[in-house]
Image (tube, rainbow, N blue to C red; front, side, top):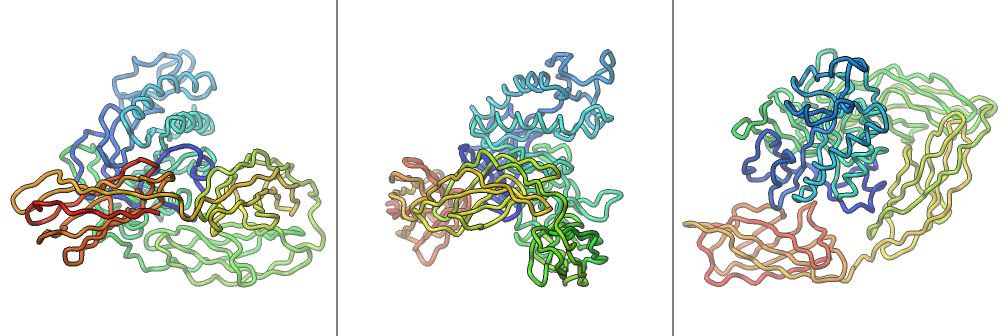
Length: 552
């Protein structure tokens, strides 16, 4: 469940004991009414009034930015948006009966949160894994009354409270604010119809969401065309389902056919590359957008034949250069399926003969902390620096050597040695090449590559009928450290054959069965239990097989 694009709340919020949804897991959107999920579903979203589904990843839907239809009487008048101080309440034009909440002042945001906390507490108490606060984009329908920055300030409060309850939190739609999701602490996205090409646009929105959230996306499509387009490029990348617009219990539910991306067409070559300016330490570039049969995910920028950065849009500034030096640049476009265009024409640009008149370095990054570690990585976060012109990015140093850079305030250093302590420091830089002094140093050890651990497993029959039965294999961590992965094996005593399995990667050869954890359930806390499920043909064995378990 990792992505090499944005570094999300896993780094900035790793101390919070929340769980993220399985990447590209089967999804069902049940906010209209709950019902038994189909086979293969691993993620379900339901209204907070419903109950979660046992053994699945459950998202709790709440209408956090507007009133529910017919429920405006549950809210104080001063907490609802009005056209003027004494004017009528503002009704959402897209959702009759829903009135917008007024998030424009700190006092209102705090008061609204107190009421929404009741639902969040309900979600946590019932055992949901995450919340889906809807109508984050209500400012787009408020006739300019609500500033999106006020919506973001309220979202920060929702994020903080959800995380305090060990709940992950999704951004619902709102592409315009997707670029701020990581800094707000949002964990993943639930989007609607990102496969649709809307009037006035030439591409769908999926690539832009992908640029912001990586593979932490759940997409709901309502049309065959949108579904086909999303599935073609992203069926193996993130979760996709087609539902009827009313999301009824007996309504449409379709999934992507096959299960893998069939997109092999690269984007068109970026055209019109030009150097739009330079300083003594930087060169600015722009180009015309590429096109793609599904959608362009981003652009990679090459300096003198070496990739130096990426951009989601059609401009880039390459900084940290040497004065009075000529550089060669080229740009390539890529899509989410990994197809890359040929390189653009090459453009040359020289930096100016002297450095920029900006000689003021950014402030020193503060609050550097190690937010988590594995056997091969350390995650860091820090507070943003300030600069008289603007901070261009941050450089991360391990044991005194620069190991990477970040445009935001988090970074994960990977490829490390287990059970080893590392020292980290961060410096801020601006476009003129001014670099701050180093932050305070923080130490963090990677975890042991072989934690003290062990496991036991038991096969339990949960249902049976003529010629077949269902069973669970319950895996218990008997060690003193959390597992990272597990494997169970057993041998059927007769002609039993596994015909279906879930929450596992399972193979059978003859009568011997081997099952390992899926991508999302390898971690088991000490004394904790995870279960895999299966359906097998033939009758239930008179003596159930002994299951052998190994964990690491």
